[in-house]
Image (cartoon, rainbow, N blue to C red; front, side, top):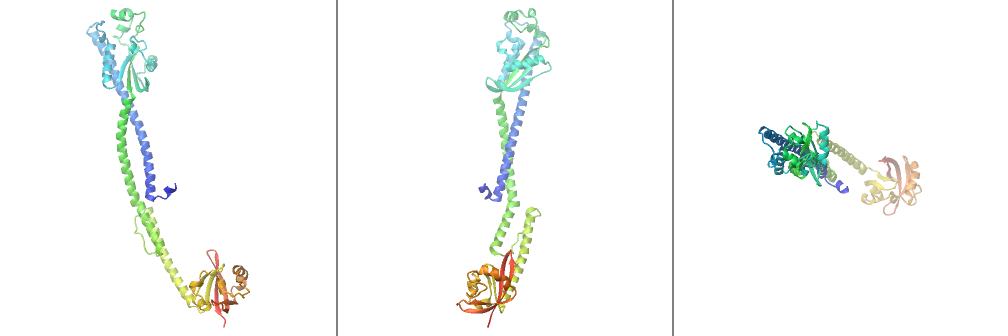
Length: 411
C-alpha cells in the first residue's frame, strides 16, 4: 500500500482504470461465454431436431412407399423395414457430422435399441403426456458429458403391420419375433412406439464455443486496449500534465520566494478552475509580499535610524531585534547578539532582572517594568557597567509574547 501511495498520479489512475477495465473485461468474457454456450446449445437443439425429424420422416416415407408399391416385406428384405432402414440411414448421416443417433423404445425387439436410463425416463414421459413433442438436456453417457435429444414418434398405419396384432404380422416377423416372447406387438394407432435419440459429445460443442469465444476475446481485447490507451492519453493531457506544471511552479515559488510566475490559463473545467485560483493566489501573495517588504523596509529604516537603542526579545530572553544604536551602546554587533540571551546585556548587580534566572524574574517583574521609565545597570561587551534608562512594552504574535525595550544610556 505504501508503494502505491508513492506512485505518480498518472500511474495511479492507469492502475485503477486498468483494474476496472480488466474486471469488466472478465465479466464481459464470462457473460459472452454463457451467451456463446447458450447459443451453441440452442444450435445443437435445432440440428438434433432436424436429424431426429428426418429419421422419423424417412421411416414414414419408406412405410408409405412400400405400401403404395405393394412391396412385401420378407427376411431377405429385412433392411427395407422402415424402422430398420431409417435407423441405419440416420446413423450414417449422424456419423458424418460427429453425432450419434438411434431409435429406441420401451418395448424393443432389438437389444441394441434398449433405452438407457435417460431415454427410459423420457419415453415414459412421452407416453404419459402426448403433447410433449421433444426433450433435451446436458448429461453424461458412459462417463462423458453429452447433449441428449429425444423426439417421440407415434405408431403409423404402416407400423402396425409388424407391431400391431401378432396374427396380422408377416410370417417372417412372427418367425423372428414369436408373440409368446416378443413385447413389441399390440400397439395402437397414434400410440408412442419409440423415439429418435440423438447424442452430441459436449467436446464437439465446447470446441465451437471456444472458437467463437477466442475470436470475441481478441476483438474485445483490442477494444479494451485501445480504450485504455485513449484514457491514458486523455488523463495525461487533461489532468496529470497541468497538475505537474502546477507542482513545478509551486516548487519554484518555494525555492525563490518570488510570486511572479503564473500558469497559462486553460478551460473552465476543474483543473482550469484550480489553475485560475492558483494564479489569483500568486497575484494576491505577490501584492502582500510587496506590501510586507515595504513595511519591513520602513520598519528597518525606523529602527536603524532611531536615536535610542531598540531591543526585542522573547519571554525566554532570546534576542530577535537589535538596532544600530543598541550596537553602539553595548558594543555587540547584530550578528553576534541575535539568537543569544538578553542576559548578556544585564549587569550582575541588577536586582530586578536577575542574571541566571532571567525568565522567572521577567515574569515576576514585568508588570512593574511595563510602560514606565526604569533605571537598571547594563553590561557592555567588554564587561563595563553602564547605567540605562529603559522603557519596556510587550506584544503577542501567534500566541507567543515578545518584549521590546527602548534603551538610552544615562549620562
